[in-house]
Image (cartoon, rainbow, N blue to C red; front, top):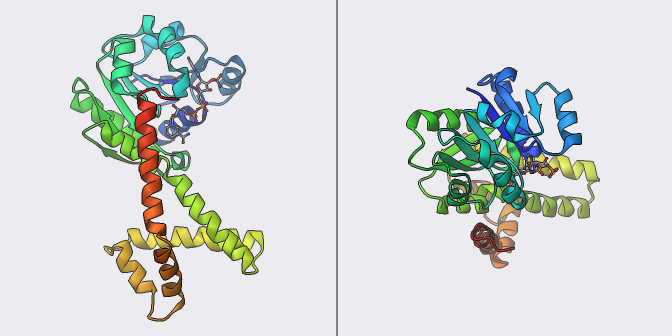
Length: 269
Ligand SMILES: NC(=O)c1ccc[n+]([C@@H]2O[C@H](COP(=O)([O-])OP(=O)(O)OC[C@H]3O[C@@H](n4cnc5c(N)ncnc54)[C@H](OP(=O)(O)O)[C@@H]3O)[C@@H](O)[C@H]2O)c1
């Protein structure tokens, strides 16, 4: 199976490297289309596959095409590649806010998968939700899921509405986590720790708490109760968060992201 990645940026290269590392495809089956000549030149020096600057040289050779350019570049991209598209090719888009209908109408294709990954895909710890048109066969879908799995975990969702919801939870989610981590690091420094000590304390606490959570059947509330003893320190912190409605603020933030994802999908700037 020949894979073409369109857009040799952060995400495109994350996919190329993860797919090669997993050995699902080898170098000779991997193609990258990158329009920026200097970047294409640099990518060509790395051992990631064949790098092309023009779609006429590579598009028709691909069985599967991963679209990984910025959403604002899609109109130019569609104009560039449309003449070389074969309706039997499978298109996987990871572009935020670009709907299946936009892609299938612009390119005249029916086999379209829309996926929403997140940043930890870069370290093999990504979370990706994906959905597809009915024309994608079961075998093609399994094949694509295997490719997406090389960057972390995946979930198939029935509707594109849930892709927008994914954007608001796991897509933007790493930023929410960094926001909470940053606040905890500030608290640590105000309590007397150095920068590096604060980073270590906080990042290891996040990692440990998540690993513990994943190894048990307990809910977050149950873990909070387990950590909080009556009249103790954790209870004081959680009471302060509850009094300040931090929980609701986080939910409201995720809903604001969801609203924005829908607006972007409708082409609002
Ligand atoms: N980064 C994330 O965490 C994340 C998460 C979920 C989804 N995504 C989605 O992933 C996509 C890529 O994001 P990114 O961060 O990887 O962007 P990026 O680093 O800017 O990469 C996009 C690359 O595509 C190139 N390009 C643009 N138009 C092209 C064309 N017509 N033909 C070939 N190459 C073209 C760009 O070249 P120039 O630099 O010359 O423009 C750039 O090198 C976006 O749609 C984004 O919504 C990203």
